Amino acid sequence: MLRLFFSSIWVIVAISFISVTTPTWVSGQTADAIRRGQLSFNEGVSLASKGDAAMAIAKFTEAIAFTPDWHLPYLNRGVMRMSVGQLVEAEEDADKALSLIRPDLPSAKVHSALAYQVKGSARQQRGENSIALDFFTKAVELDPKNPKILNSLGTALRVLGKLEEALNAHNKSIEMNSTVSMFYVNRSYVLEKLGKSDDAFKDLNKAISLNQNDATAYYTRGAMRMRVSLYSEALTDLDKAIQLNSNTSGYFHARGLCHYYLKNYEDAVKDQTRAVELDPKNVRAFSDRAIIHAAMKNLKLAVEDLRTAIAIAKNSSVLRYNLAYFLYQSGEYEASIQILTEVITNHPNWKAPYMLRSNGYIKQGMQAKARADRAKLAAIASDVKPTGEQYTIFNIDVAALVQAVD
Image (cartoon, rainbow, N blue to C red; front, side, top):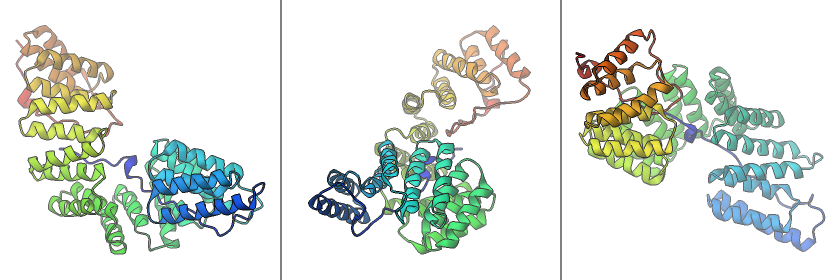
C-alpha cells in the first residue's frame, strides 16, 4: 500500500515581519536618504502584509540602498525570502541584521530573536534540524513570550523526535495565543505521533474553525484521515485544500494517493501528474505514480516513472528495488538482476531482493545462482529493510513469485 509521508515541506513556519515609524537609530546617512529609505521600507511592509513577497523584497532592497546600516530592511527581507524559498539568502540577511542590531536598543532582543528564527527556519527547510533547533532555542531565550517562535521550536523538536518537549512548546504557544490555526495544525502532528489521534483530530477541527481558509489544516486532516482509512472523508478535505491552494504539489500527491486507495486510478494518475508538473523534483509523486501505473497494468510507464525518480534520488535502494520488480514483471530479467545486485550489495540482509533475483536467475536458466540466492535468503536471521527512505516499498506476494529450483 502506498503511504503518505510528511517531509520538511510540511514544516509550517510562522514568522512575523516588523514595522516601525522612524529609523531614529540610523547614522551616517543624509536626512533625504533616511526619508527615502523609510518610504521604501514602509512600502515593503505594506506589500508583505498583502502577501506580495517579490515586490516586498524589492522594496526592502531599495531601503537597504538608502540606509545600508539599518538592520530592519535586512531582517524583513530575510523573512520574505524565507517565504519564497530563498533559504541561503534569507539566512544571509538574518546574519547581516544581527551584525547591525545595536544592543542598547529597547527592541534589540526581540529583533535578534526574529533573526535567529529566520536562521533556524532556513536550516530546518534544508534538513539541518539539529542546527535549526540551536537557533530556535537561542530565539526563545531572547524572546520567550513570542508564541510564533515557540511554535517554531516545537516543530524543530518534533522533527528530531523529541515529542514530549515538542508538545510542551506547542502547548505554551497556544496558551499565549489561542487564535492561530497554524499552532493547532503543528500540535496535531505531535499528538498523532504520540498516539493521541482523537486529540490530533480535535486540534485540526479547531484550526479549521479558526480559519476556514487554512488549506494546510484541510490537507493535514485529509492526510490523517487517510492513515485511518477514512478515504471518502479524506478526499473531501483534500479537495478543499486544493480549492484553496491549487499550486502546492504535495496536495495533489496526497489526493492522488486517496484516489488510488479508492481505486480511482485514472484520477490518481491525473493528480500525480499535476504534482510533478508543479514540482518536477517531487520524487514521491513519480514513485507513487509508477505504482499506480503498475496497478493499471501499464508497466512501461511504471518503469519510466521510476527511472525518473531514481535520476532525482540517485542513492535510493527502495526505488531501485521497485524498478527491478517492474522490469522482472516486464520480462527484462537481465536488467532486473543487474539492479538487484546493486541493491543487495548495499543491503545484504534485506530478504526481498534475494528472492526476486533468484527468480530472475531461474528465468534466465541460471539454476546454480538461483540456488545460491535461496541459500543466502535462508541464512538471513532478521530481515533488514532500508531505513530513512520515504518511498513506498512495493510489496510483492513472494509465494506467488517463487520459482522452483531444479
